[in-house]
Image 1 (cartoon, rainbow, N blue to C red):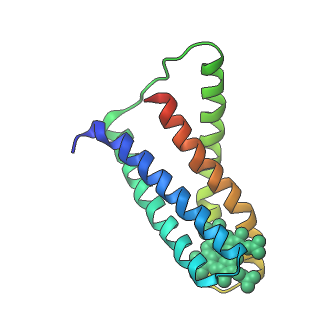
Image 2 (image 1 turned 30 degrees about the vertical axis):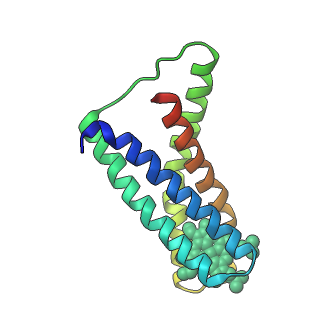
Image 3 (image 1 turned 180 degrees about the vertical axis):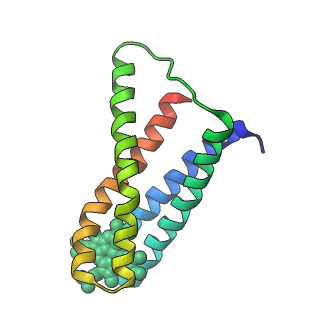
Length: 135
Ligand code: HEM
């Protein structure tokens, strides 16, 4: 495997964790607590691997610039900036939500979960969009 293969691996891991996250949310809305827990732990696990690959890629390959011009460039940067800010924010939010589940503090877990879920989903979806616009 080459360093140049990593963006595709990263985008795939990101899409996988987004799908697990969505499935985990659908499960809890339908009352399937065990399936929810398993899918959320799987999403967390895949996201952790993704983060490792992502940081490795940027350490080895450096930076790639967007080549589009005009409106698409503006849209690209709006998505990228919101993606970066929320990606940094979502890490402690996910840790907090999982910690609360581990401690079985369900009332607070629900509160954080309802906040963490849409932010995590946004970060995941915009990650795929940024990848598609860049490569
Ligand atoms: C960051 C990952 C997670 C997110 C975003 C998340 C999100 C949520 C949300 C949004 C709800 C409330 C659903 C609703 O009623 O609207 C919820 C409930 C719940 N979650 Fe999670 N969850 C996560 C991880 C986990 C984990 C790791 C476990 C178990 C080990 C877990 C167990 C539960 C349970 C049992 C409930 C139901 C609580 C109750 O009795 O009301 N969750 N979660």
